[in-house]
Amino acid sequence: MEYYQAELIEEEVFQAWIAGEESESKDFKRTANVNYVDPEINKEIRNKAKPFAKWLEEAEEDEEEENE
Image 1 (cartoon, one colour):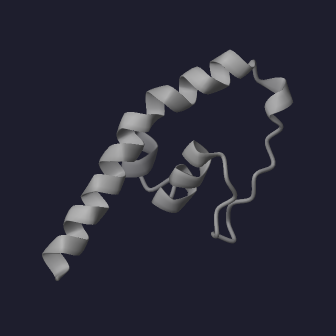
Image 2 (cartoon, helix red, strand yellow):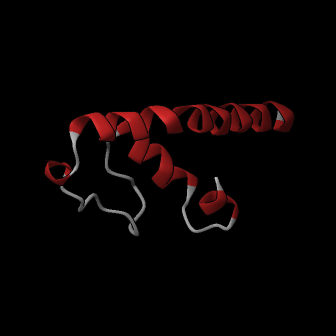
Image 3 (spheres, rainbow, N blue to C red):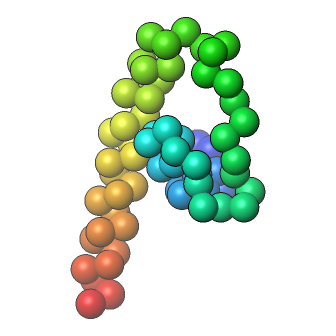
């Protein structure tokens, strides 16, 4: 969360990482090779980050509702 608050990572990039996808952002392309990370550790890291990803998604939905 500190990286997000310090604006070192964009929300779109974080959400793409959680989903294991490429981001539409020109500043982010998946270059890491998951072959160098133990699959269990990779899964554990993503699972621990999912509550934060869910919070971001819900905050965005709340913001959209307020703007309507």
